[in-house]
Length: 348
Ligand code: GLY
Image: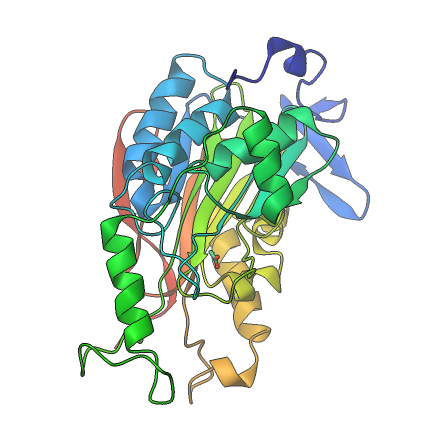
């Protein structure tokens, strides 16, 4: 089972930059959009959600050694998918309300303009790699459920129990304290689990040649209704790459992101000339504007959180979040570090 994009994939797949150059910069033109000049950087950069600190370090190092950007980003997210202590993705991810772990992932490869995704995939620890196999070996973009599992098994992926002792204990505690009208005896009164975690890892990477990729993988919303698919496997929501412009991806409440196609919108905001951070914050303002009243507080602010992470072709990177207090991870060409995320609203 080869995990590498073959060299053949890259032949003729150099950047889709339109012909013509001004001021030494490629002139990118798109019907209906102003022409923009995207200066290509010369460093390897990766930006991710905070749980991607190890991931961006690995991704940055691997692209520095010449690995393809998508292969490197997937190696980065696999650190979390395979980590039993990360309850937000892959092995050890929190299950749905039936106690079944259903995983979502998607990826895009800028140079070849290809995409792959899986939704509600059960029993496979690394959905990001299965998404890459959809990208590499099919004429489709997304496979879900049983079909996605059969596809993975056909390539030699192993079916495994994705529950750890810890995630099973947390699911059982949630089930036991579900509500006053269920048939489960409450085991820990006063400790009702009201917080439903939405964990995810997104990595966006650009190399010194200006080639860009992105990947997002998740176990989704904990205790979700079986079959629920979030934003992570949706191309344009969970992540998006345009090799002429940059890449963006998201963590947080997937339903809010799907409604604005937030990763696509963030890349489009960068196309209009916004910095990665401003592009992310602009997308979040759209999220606020499209949020239904049920999910707003008395001051009109969302009662959930959502984050976007972005890098442009020049290697500038940034992030944005709705509520203060979050951090994101970035490899800046030399070192990996956590940074505070610029936000729309200060937490009280
Ligand atoms: N953003 C991850 C999810 O909502 O599933």
